[in-house]
Length: 244
Image 1: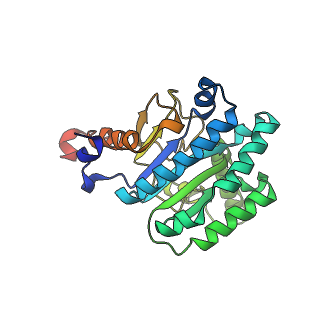
Image 2 (image 1 turned 135 degrees about the horizontal axis):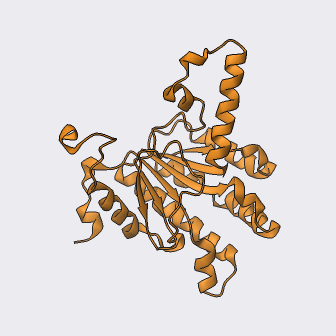
């Protein structure tokens, strides 16, 4: 039986976050430039996004470019920006009723990329299906620091009392305040770390790590991750008896 046949359609995770790792290593194994791995990885994004939408996932958040990635060689960063510009296909989003959104410090992105992103966000804003969220120029430490600054300013301006600040108020100042926390976080490529990604939001997310490089992470690998998630008992600090 395939993994797709094993999926319980009534227990699809509402929010799946993915760390798309392994593009460069995948290309190197084939004697190609790292940019080739990123190109094939972009194709995987469209495949997984369409399949996630069909399965009923409500939010798919993809770690596309971290704040630390700005430290990569300039030619690789430039190639990634060009690829990002070229790979945004509004037709795919409209066909699948996908709403496109972005989180991160987009002010650092080139103007031509930011313009393309803004246009896609605007044109898909009325779509009612899955939200595809790209984390661009993003890191949790940046996000949490920015939230702390905004909270401090709100207190300083008398808009908020210190006593009012709790986890829900703090979360409302994060860039992810429009969506629920991830139910499932997937990392491809064999590494076993979160790499500064959605650290606040993944406090109780189910974590799934696989050795498959992102360019090879196609539908059956995605189904496998969903099946693994559905076998787990999510207790959120309670006992099995309480959950039952």
